[in-house]
Structures are given as structure tokens and as C-alpha cells.
Image (cartoon, rainbow, N blue to C red; front, top):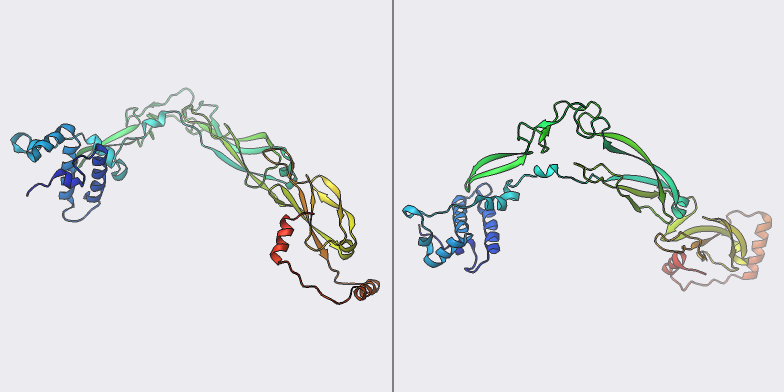
Length: 374
């Protein structure tokens, strides 16, 4: 059978770069590898792709092929010479077919410890003003008996007999590309290169112990639910003398009986009676700073919003505080005694029975309730 042009096989131009060749080979090898493609001609197509790349990826052989064609890459006896460094192929197929370099050696390098997370519950006032609070969390600490070796005091870890201390094992596997070596983490020592014959009785060979830690921390003023605070170095201990991880505090603020929060403003709904709304009044209302006097203007309508400056939440990153917004709700009495009924009847006669349709929309009323001011 007449051989096809190698550039045609890979689907590249004659001036293709080495990266373009490798990219084309990777794509076609994935497409025609017999372990993936079960069609009748997959194996022949895969060999053809392999042959083309073996020649074109080698600078000398590519130059000979460009000058003399297929005859330029004939070996002794007229047979083609397609010997190739299979390390290149192993790298290309590593992530797809399970070959590649083991991470076993990297297990012995220092590694950062894992991060820990806990939830910290705060009252509304604690979140507004900040607080020094004691937290409690559980983490691993280096075993006080074996100093982290995992071996019973007086004994030492020994070199792993399976991998000879390398932390990895190699297995040869025959493929269509030739003999490939698969490197995996040693199953006996899990990549450490050592085995413990007499585990530490205190930590059962783990090298660490579980401890409950208590720590006083400062929660800044102005935090809210969802705020995250990082405490560096308070997480799990590092591996092989690596740095410890961090402890993350996730703030959760409990609901308040009266107050709600919108950004740095505090919202309060206040019920007043019709006389207070019509005539105006001075009342005491709760704030996060304690009871404060509030003047209600005469003629206040339901949904009117009053603003108390600097009575809100301190800015978490900056100076100043938000405001307290008071949404007025005028209560209409459902039961009246005889004296009250007589007063309302006289008022009704005085005011008349004429009605006035509202020109403003309900949406405008909502906007005023949430963001208006007086």
C-alpha cells in the first residue's frame, strides 16, 4: 500500500512548527487510539499517525524526509527506522491514558497545612459595635510523644521495602507505542519512603493529636452575616515542616426583636396612633445606643420615613456611621369606647365626607418607605 505523505497524515502544512505537530499528533492519537476507538481501521490509522510524528518531530529525520521523501528515512535493509524517545509520548498521553510522572517524590517536600472554618454567632449589638470574644475550635497538633514522626519513642521509621525509599514504584507496560513505564505512588508507604513498624501509642502513628483550642479574638465593629475573618497560622499544622493553614471565621448575626439592617442603616418600624400622626408628638424610641427622643411632625402619613443621623452601623472600613430610619405605621383603632366614638363622629362631621384619590403609585410609596427621609 502506498504510504501517504506524513504532513497529510497529521493534517499540517510543510512549514508547521514543533508545537503545531505535537498538537496535531495529540488530537489524532486521542481519536484513533485502539483503547478508545473500536473501528476496524483504528489501529492502522494510529500506527500511521505515530509513524508520521516520529519522523517529523525529529529535526534530522524531518530534513531527510523533506529532501528525499519516504526513501530518506529508510533504515538498514530498506525498513523504516522509527525509533523514538517514548518520554515525549508518555508526556503527551499522561493525562489521557493514565501515564506520567508520579507525585510521590513531591510528598516529601514541605506543604502548607489545611485551612479550618468555624461559624461565630453574634447578637445584633455585638455586630454593630464589635466585641472581644472567645472562640473554640478543634485542630491537629504535633504529637507530644513522638514529635510528629509517628513512631513509638525509642524506635524510628524504616526505609520502605517496596519502593526502596523512593516513594514511588515503576511498572513497565507494553503498548502500541512500545514499552512504557508507569510511575505511581508507593501503596505501602503512600509516597513517604518510610514505614513505621512500631506506631506511636499516643497518636496511633498519625504524628498528630486532636486538641480543643480556645482563643480570644477581636471582632471589628460593623461586621454582618457573611463577613469572613481570616486568622493566619491557626489552621492545621503543615506537612514536612510546612507552614500551618489559616482559620476562617464565618460571621452569623442573630435577628433582632426590633431592628433590621440595610447596609449601614438600621431600620425600625414604629406604630403610632392617629392623634400622634395628626397632631405630632415627641416619643422615646429604641436605638442601638439606648432610648432616644424622636419628634413626630404633625400631619405624618402612614409610611413616612424619619431619619436619625449617625445612629446606624459603623462603617467596617472607614469612619462614620449609618443612620437609623424609622418607618411610621399609623394604627387605626378597631375598638372604641363611647367617648372615643363621639369624638371621632364629631371629627367626621368636621372633616366632611369628600375623598381624594392618590396620584402617587404604590411603588413610590415603597420607595419612600425604604429610602426616603424627612
